[in-house]
Length: 178
Image 1 (spheres, rainbow, N blue to C red):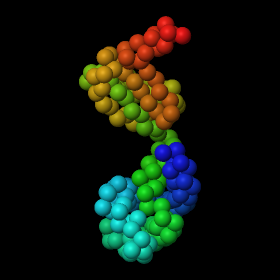
Image 2: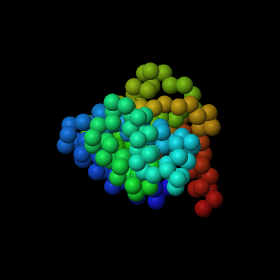
Image 3: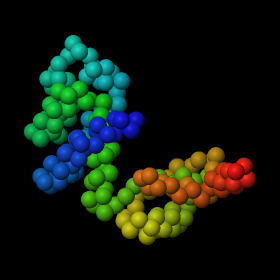
Image 4: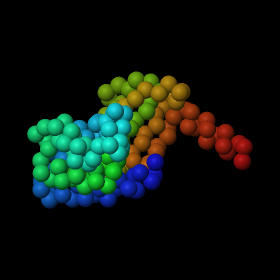
């Protein structure tokens, strides 16, 4: 997986710079989201990888799918991507683009896993604590994971704050066995 990210990153950075210079971050975000969904579809991936179909044919299909989102820069980007047989990178490119966009806008995405359903007050407190910690506006995605036993586990990028009972038990077990 790390290898694909390494290959996808230059494309995402180039697209982000292009979108930022053109003041078109939302439009690119929308187009990349549609392309990422298409790239995740097994039939579309098989079509794009099939040597019987050229890059122009795949591009024509994707342009039709994009509709009005298929601006000249998006079309050019697709041409380069498909000529280099990088269709499978579209979901990663879209994900990296969204990360760059969030950083540019001063916000960050946090995943909060809780053993139980959080109240709106608890969620607001956690979001505030994370915002103070990373000095950015935080948008949280919450999921209930009963395996945590109790507490929460919060992830922002590569940072993980594990305040769950399961995490504490794992730490205790590791300390006792070493």
